[in-house]
Picture (cartoon, rainbow, N blue to C red):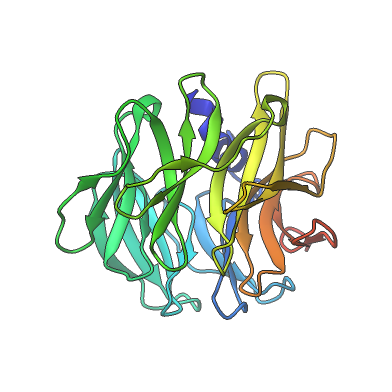
Length: 290
């Protein structure tokens, strides 16, 4: 089951590094920049680009593995580097200046809360991982999810009161769940038909009323995925930009107006950053064109 949740990583990491693969987009709160990870230099590096594809700039220049970037309310790009089961958290300005390590956690894929003081991360083996909550600078780790459930990366709601995450059931199905920030009241949000695939990578809409998620089928004979939106209250789900081809639409991110979604896709033949309206129309490739 390990490769299923890591299928997104496998689409970015190739045996031969020079090929350009762009992914993990995240849009700044002012809507002017998209931060993303690219392998075009032979290593995973943080880049920024404008939503219209202009002003593309490489920000980092190290060989360390880097996790998906996201934005702080102060306008900084936050990302982490991994070394086994330990992660270092960094911030950097969108012009590439003022790279600074702000913390370190004994886990994977750390995500800072909107308050900038708390962090969640995954610990344990990949086949039995759970989420942990801690303060960034005064660690007092608190396990949020049970040991009998396998849980991966969590995402904070805009108000910091809830966390969305992907959890594997005893039947090896992968669904999106939501819990309160203290780990209470966990509840399954997605109830998609098994043939649609496995649901993961839940990111909150700007107002916290919807989630954009990635749902895919990853196996030896098929690699295909779609972006969906899910109503947090009702669980009603809508598939966006539906296709019946072996295409990968993954890792969604909301624009601050809530009307568009950025995502990574191999629709052009290689992984690049795309955008579309929240109804799945007006698909537009942003990177990998020039």
